[in-house]
Length: 339
Image (cartoon, one colour):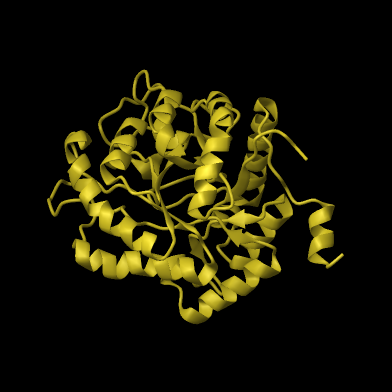
Protein backbone atom coordinates (compact mmCIF):
# COMPACT_ATOMS: atom_id res chain seq x y z
CA UNK A 1 0.00 0.00 0.00
CA UNK A 2 1.33 3.42 -0.99
CA UNK A 3 2.65 5.65 1.78
CA UNK A 4 2.38 8.72 -0.41
CA UNK A 5 -0.47 11.15 0.29
CA UNK A 6 -3.25 10.60 -2.21
CA UNK A 7 -6.06 12.41 -3.94
CA UNK A 8 -9.20 11.28 -5.74
CA UNK A 9 -9.54 12.21 -9.40
CA UNK A 10 -12.82 13.39 -10.84
CA UNK A 11 -14.08 15.45 -13.78
CA UNK A 12 -16.99 17.50 -14.98
CA UNK A 13 -18.56 14.88 -17.21
CA UNK A 14 -20.16 17.25 -19.73
CA UNK A 15 -16.70 18.50 -20.74
CA UNK A 16 -15.82 15.04 -22.05
CA UNK A 17 -18.68 14.62 -24.52
CA UNK A 18 -19.09 15.98 -28.04
CA UNK A 19 -22.79 15.78 -27.30
CA UNK A 20 -24.06 16.15 -23.75
CA UNK A 21 -25.61 12.67 -23.71
CA UNK A 22 -25.15 10.84 -20.41
CA UNK A 23 -23.93 7.68 -22.15
CA UNK A 24 -21.18 9.56 -24.02
CA UNK A 25 -20.15 11.44 -20.89
CA UNK A 26 -19.95 8.30 -18.77
CA UNK A 27 -18.29 6.16 -21.44
CA UNK A 28 -15.52 8.74 -21.89
CA UNK A 29 -14.80 9.07 -18.17
CA UNK A 30 -14.94 5.33 -17.54
CA UNK A 31 -12.53 4.68 -20.42
CA UNK A 32 -10.12 7.22 -18.94
CA UNK A 33 -10.18 5.33 -15.64
CA UNK A 34 -12.12 7.82 -13.54
CA UNK A 35 -14.56 6.64 -10.88
CA UNK A 36 -16.05 9.98 -9.88
CA UNK A 37 -17.70 12.79 -11.81
CA UNK A 38 -19.64 15.98 -11.31
CA UNK A 39 -22.87 16.41 -13.26
CA UNK A 40 -23.64 19.75 -14.84
CA UNK A 41 -25.34 19.81 -18.28
CA UNK A 42 -26.73 16.49 -19.45
CA UNK A 43 -29.00 14.90 -22.03
CA UNK A 44 -30.16 11.91 -20.01
CA UNK A 45 -32.00 10.03 -22.77
CA UNK A 46 -29.63 11.08 -25.57
CA UNK A 47 -32.36 12.66 -27.66
CA UNK A 48 -31.03 16.21 -27.85
CA UNK A 49 -32.76 17.57 -24.74
CA UNK A 50 -29.92 19.07 -22.70
CA UNK A 51 -30.74 20.30 -19.20
CA UNK A 52 -28.76 21.49 -16.24
CA UNK A 53 -28.70 18.65 -13.70
CA UNK A 54 -30.75 20.71 -11.23
CA UNK A 55 -33.58 20.89 -13.78
CA UNK A 56 -34.05 17.13 -14.24
CA UNK A 57 -37.32 15.40 -13.51
CA UNK A 58 -37.69 12.61 -10.97
CA UNK A 59 -37.70 10.03 -13.76
CA UNK A 60 -34.60 11.54 -15.36
CA UNK A 61 -32.79 11.37 -12.03
CA UNK A 62 -33.67 7.68 -11.80
CA UNK A 63 -32.33 7.07 -15.31
CA UNK A 64 -29.14 9.02 -14.62
CA UNK A 65 -28.53 7.22 -11.30
CA UNK A 66 -28.99 3.88 -13.07
CA UNK A 67 -26.54 4.85 -15.81
CA UNK A 68 -23.88 6.10 -13.42
CA UNK A 69 -24.06 2.78 -11.57
CA UNK A 70 -23.74 0.83 -14.82
CA UNK A 71 -20.60 2.79 -15.70
CA UNK A 72 -19.10 2.45 -12.21
CA UNK A 73 -19.28 6.15 -11.41
CA UNK A 74 -20.13 8.07 -8.25
CA UNK A 75 -20.80 11.78 -7.88
CA UNK A 76 -18.06 14.03 -6.55
CA UNK A 77 -20.15 17.20 -6.34
CA UNK A 78 -23.14 18.82 -7.96
CA UNK A 79 -21.85 21.42 -10.42
CA UNK A 80 -24.39 24.00 -9.36
CA UNK A 81 -24.77 27.62 -10.41
CA UNK A 82 -25.54 28.81 -6.87
CA UNK A 83 -24.05 32.26 -6.32
CA UNK A 84 -23.79 33.25 -9.99
CA UNK A 85 -26.35 36.01 -9.64
CA UNK A 86 -26.09 39.61 -8.49
CA UNK A 87 -25.63 40.26 -4.80
CA UNK A 88 -27.61 43.50 -5.06
CA UNK A 89 -30.52 44.61 -7.24
CA UNK A 90 -28.49 47.36 -8.89
CA UNK A 91 -28.16 48.17 -12.59
CA UNK A 92 -24.43 48.04 -13.37
CA UNK A 93 -24.29 47.46 -17.09
CA UNK A 94 -23.80 43.70 -16.79
CA UNK A 95 -26.17 41.00 -18.03
CA UNK A 96 -26.15 39.22 -14.67
CA UNK A 97 -29.50 38.70 -12.98
CA UNK A 98 -30.68 39.43 -9.46
CA UNK A 99 -32.92 37.02 -7.56
CA UNK A 100 -34.55 37.73 -4.22
CA UNK A 101 -32.78 35.69 -1.47
CA UNK A 102 -35.94 33.91 -0.27
CA UNK A 103 -36.97 33.03 -3.81
CA UNK A 104 -33.43 31.85 -4.51
CA UNK A 105 -33.48 29.48 -1.53
CA UNK A 106 -36.81 28.03 -2.66
CA UNK A 107 -35.79 27.55 -6.29
CA UNK A 108 -32.11 27.33 -7.29
CA UNK A 109 -30.87 26.12 -3.90
CA UNK A 110 -33.75 23.71 -3.34
CA UNK A 111 -33.33 22.24 -6.83
CA UNK A 112 -29.60 21.72 -6.21
CA UNK A 113 -30.27 19.88 -2.96
CA UNK A 114 -32.81 17.71 -4.77
CA UNK A 115 -30.16 16.78 -7.34
CA UNK A 116 -27.64 15.93 -4.62
CA UNK A 117 -30.10 13.62 -2.88
CA UNK A 118 -31.13 11.89 -6.11
CA UNK A 119 -27.57 11.19 -7.26
CA UNK A 120 -25.90 10.46 -3.92
CA UNK A 121 -23.69 13.56 -3.75
CA UNK A 122 -22.00 14.65 -0.53
CA UNK A 123 -20.76 17.99 -1.89
CA UNK A 124 -22.11 21.00 -3.77
CA UNK A 125 -19.99 23.64 -5.43
CA UNK A 126 -21.16 27.24 -5.46
CA UNK A 127 -20.02 30.81 -5.94
CA UNK A 128 -19.80 34.13 -4.12
CA UNK A 129 -22.18 36.43 -6.06
CA UNK A 130 -21.51 39.31 -8.43
CA UNK A 131 -20.76 42.62 -6.78
CA UNK A 132 -21.70 45.81 -8.66
CA UNK A 133 -19.47 45.89 -11.73
CA UNK A 134 -16.60 48.32 -11.47
CA UNK A 135 -16.61 48.47 -7.68
CA UNK A 136 -14.17 47.01 -5.15
CA UNK A 137 -15.30 43.48 -4.18
CA UNK A 138 -13.66 43.81 -0.75
CA UNK A 139 -16.42 46.10 0.49
CA UNK A 140 -19.05 43.45 -0.26
CA UNK A 141 -17.50 40.52 1.61
CA UNK A 142 -19.80 40.81 4.65
CA UNK A 143 -22.94 41.16 2.53
CA UNK A 144 -21.96 38.15 0.43
CA UNK A 145 -21.26 36.12 3.57
CA UNK A 146 -24.66 37.07 4.99
CA UNK A 147 -26.29 35.94 1.75
CA UNK A 148 -24.35 32.65 1.75
CA UNK A 149 -24.92 31.66 5.39
CA UNK A 150 -28.56 30.53 4.93
CA UNK A 151 -27.50 28.48 1.89
CA UNK A 152 -24.65 26.81 3.79
CA UNK A 153 -27.00 26.15 6.72
CA UNK A 154 -29.57 24.45 4.48
CA UNK A 155 -26.81 22.22 3.13
CA UNK A 156 -25.68 21.37 6.67
CA UNK A 157 -29.18 20.25 7.62
CA UNK A 158 -29.08 17.52 4.98
CA UNK A 159 -25.42 16.60 5.54
CA UNK A 160 -23.93 18.34 2.51
CA UNK A 161 -20.60 20.11 2.17
CA UNK A 162 -20.77 23.48 0.42
CA UNK A 163 -17.68 24.32 -1.63
CA UNK A 164 -17.12 27.99 -2.43
CA UNK A 165 -15.14 28.34 -5.66
CA UNK A 166 -12.68 31.11 -6.44
CA UNK A 167 -13.68 32.75 -9.72
CA UNK A 168 -13.06 35.92 -11.71
CA UNK A 169 -15.68 38.70 -11.66
CA UNK A 170 -17.23 37.50 -8.40
CA UNK A 171 -16.64 38.80 -4.88
CA UNK A 172 -14.43 35.78 -4.16
CA UNK A 173 -12.23 36.42 -7.19
CA UNK A 174 -8.93 35.56 -5.50
CA UNK A 175 -7.64 33.50 -2.61
CA UNK A 176 -7.46 36.39 -0.16
CA UNK A 177 -11.09 37.40 -0.76
CA UNK A 178 -12.28 33.79 -0.63
CA UNK A 179 -10.47 33.32 2.68
CA UNK A 180 -12.16 36.47 4.01
CA UNK A 181 -15.55 35.07 2.97
CA UNK A 182 -14.85 31.72 4.66
CA UNK A 183 -13.83 33.52 7.85
CA UNK A 184 -16.98 35.65 7.78
CA UNK A 185 -19.27 32.65 7.11
CA UNK A 186 -17.53 30.48 9.71
CA UNK A 187 -19.50 27.26 9.18
CA UNK A 188 -17.89 23.81 9.50
CA UNK A 189 -19.49 22.47 6.31
CA UNK A 190 -18.16 25.43 4.27
CA UNK A 191 -14.90 24.77 2.44
CA UNK A 192 -13.15 26.57 -0.41
CA UNK A 193 -12.38 25.32 -3.91
CA UNK A 194 -9.17 26.46 -5.54
CA UNK A 195 -8.97 26.86 -9.32
CA UNK A 196 -5.70 28.21 -10.66
CA UNK A 197 -7.00 29.18 -14.10
CA UNK A 198 -9.82 31.21 -12.58
CA UNK A 199 -7.08 33.39 -11.10
CA UNK A 200 -4.49 33.42 -13.89
CA UNK A 201 -7.12 34.21 -16.54
CA UNK A 202 -7.57 37.62 -14.94
CA UNK A 203 -4.23 38.66 -16.50
CA UNK A 204 -3.39 40.83 -13.51
CA UNK A 205 0.20 42.12 -13.57
CA UNK A 206 2.32 40.22 -11.07
CA UNK A 207 -0.42 37.79 -10.05
CA UNK A 208 0.89 34.89 -7.96
CA UNK A 209 -1.49 31.94 -8.14
CA UNK A 210 0.40 30.00 -5.50
CA UNK A 211 0.16 32.89 -3.05
CA UNK A 212 -3.60 33.03 -3.66
CA UNK A 213 -3.82 29.29 -2.98
CA UNK A 214 -1.83 29.67 0.25
CA UNK A 215 -4.12 32.50 1.36
CA UNK A 216 -7.14 30.17 1.24
CA UNK A 217 -5.36 26.97 2.28
CA UNK A 218 -6.79 26.88 5.81
CA UNK A 219 -10.31 26.60 4.39
CA UNK A 220 -9.32 24.42 1.40
CA UNK A 221 -11.63 21.52 0.58
CA UNK A 222 -10.91 20.46 -2.98
CA UNK A 223 -9.42 21.73 -6.23
CA UNK A 224 -10.59 22.21 -9.79
CA UNK A 225 -7.88 21.51 -12.31
CA UNK A 226 -7.63 23.75 -15.32
CA UNK A 227 -4.79 25.97 -16.44
CA UNK A 228 -4.41 29.12 -18.46
CA UNK A 229 -1.66 30.71 -20.50
CA UNK A 230 -1.55 34.40 -19.64
CA UNK A 231 -1.95 36.72 -22.61
CA UNK A 232 0.51 39.56 -22.06
CA UNK A 233 -1.35 41.70 -24.59
CA UNK A 234 -4.38 41.88 -22.32
CA UNK A 235 -4.67 44.32 -19.43
CA UNK A 236 -6.78 43.82 -16.31
CA UNK A 237 -9.81 46.10 -16.55
CA UNK A 238 -11.60 44.81 -13.48
CA UNK A 239 -13.78 42.42 -15.50
CA UNK A 240 -12.99 39.25 -17.44
CA UNK A 241 -14.98 38.64 -20.62
CA UNK A 242 -15.51 34.95 -19.91
CA UNK A 243 -17.01 34.17 -23.31
CA UNK A 244 -13.78 35.26 -25.03
CA UNK A 245 -11.36 33.18 -22.98
CA UNK A 246 -9.43 30.94 -25.36
CA UNK A 247 -6.11 30.33 -23.63
CA UNK A 248 -6.94 27.31 -21.44
CA UNK A 249 -4.22 24.65 -21.49
CA UNK A 250 -3.37 21.38 -19.68
CA UNK A 251 -2.13 21.54 -16.09
CA UNK A 252 1.52 20.90 -16.98
CA UNK A 253 2.01 23.78 -19.42
CA UNK A 254 0.10 26.81 -18.10
CA UNK A 255 0.83 29.81 -15.90
CA UNK A 256 -1.11 28.78 -12.79
CA UNK A 257 1.84 27.03 -11.15
CA UNK A 258 0.30 23.63 -10.53
CA UNK A 259 3.61 21.95 -9.76
CA UNK A 260 4.39 24.42 -6.97
CA UNK A 261 0.84 24.40 -5.64
CA UNK A 262 0.60 20.61 -5.62
CA UNK A 263 3.97 20.30 -3.88
CA UNK A 264 2.60 22.47 -1.09
CA UNK A 265 -0.73 20.63 -1.06
CA UNK A 266 1.14 17.34 -0.65
CA UNK A 267 2.43 18.46 2.75
CA UNK A 268 -1.04 19.39 3.96
CA UNK A 269 -3.06 16.55 2.42
CA UNK A 270 -3.25 14.34 5.54
CA UNK A 271 -4.81 17.16 7.58
CA UNK A 272 -7.17 18.21 4.79
CA UNK A 273 -8.20 14.62 4.11
CA UNK A 274 -9.01 14.11 7.78
CA UNK A 275 -11.20 17.23 7.72
CA UNK A 276 -13.02 16.21 4.55
CA UNK A 277 -13.63 12.64 5.73
CA UNK A 278 -15.06 13.98 8.98
CA UNK A 279 -17.48 16.06 6.92
CA UNK A 280 -18.56 12.98 4.95
CA UNK A 281 -16.44 13.12 1.79
CA UNK A 282 -14.39 10.07 0.71
CA UNK A 283 -11.20 12.15 0.53
CA UNK A 284 -9.68 15.17 -1.19
CA UNK A 285 -10.69 15.61 -4.81
CA UNK A 286 -8.79 17.06 -7.73
CA UNK A 287 -11.50 17.64 -10.28
CA UNK A 288 -10.74 18.20 -13.94
CA UNK A 289 -12.57 21.08 -15.61
CA UNK A 290 -10.06 21.68 -18.42
CA UNK A 291 -11.94 23.93 -20.92
CA UNK A 292 -9.36 22.88 -23.53
CA UNK A 293 -11.73 23.66 -26.40
CA UNK A 294 -13.34 26.70 -24.81
CA UNK A 295 -14.97 28.00 -21.65
CA UNK A 296 -17.61 30.48 -20.58
CA UNK A 297 -19.59 31.80 -17.66
CA UNK A 298 -21.49 28.60 -16.93
CA UNK A 299 -19.31 25.82 -18.32
CA UNK A 300 -16.71 24.67 -20.78
CA UNK A 301 -15.83 21.98 -23.29
CA UNK A 302 -12.86 19.69 -23.87
CA UNK A 303 -14.23 16.70 -25.79
CA UNK A 304 -13.22 13.10 -25.13
CA UNK A 305 -9.78 13.70 -26.64
CA UNK A 306 -9.27 16.91 -24.68
CA UNK A 307 -10.32 15.28 -21.43
CA UNK A 308 -7.84 12.48 -22.12
CA UNK A 309 -5.07 15.02 -22.65
CA UNK A 310 -6.07 16.80 -19.43
CA UNK A 311 -6.12 13.61 -17.35
CA UNK A 312 -2.71 12.47 -18.57
CA UNK A 313 -1.23 15.93 -18.05
CA UNK A 314 -2.47 16.09 -14.47
CA UNK A 315 -1.19 12.58 -13.77
CA UNK A 316 2.27 13.58 -15.02
CA UNK A 317 2.35 16.48 -12.56
CA UNK A 318 1.10 14.29 -9.70
CA UNK A 319 3.71 11.63 -10.48
CA UNK A 320 6.43 14.28 -10.54
CA UNK A 321 5.51 15.85 -7.19
CA UNK A 322 4.79 12.50 -5.51
CA UNK A 323 1.04 12.53 -4.91
CA UNK A 324 -0.74 9.23 -5.37
CA UNK A 325 -4.05 8.66 -7.20
CA UNK A 326 -5.99 5.74 -8.60
CA UNK A 327 -7.25 5.05 -12.10
CA UNK A 328 -9.31 1.95 -12.82
CA UNK A 329 -7.28 -1.21 -13.17
CA UNK A 330 -7.98 -4.91 -13.65
CA UNK A 331 -8.70 -5.27 -9.95
CA UNK A 332 -11.63 -2.88 -10.37
CA UNK A 333 -12.91 -4.91 -13.32
CA UNK A 334 -12.69 -8.15 -11.32
CA UNK A 335 -14.50 -6.55 -8.39
CA UNK A 336 -17.26 -5.28 -10.67
CA UNK A 337 -17.63 -8.79 -12.08
CA UNK A 338 -17.87 -10.27 -8.60
CA UNK A 339 -14.51 -12.07 -8.57
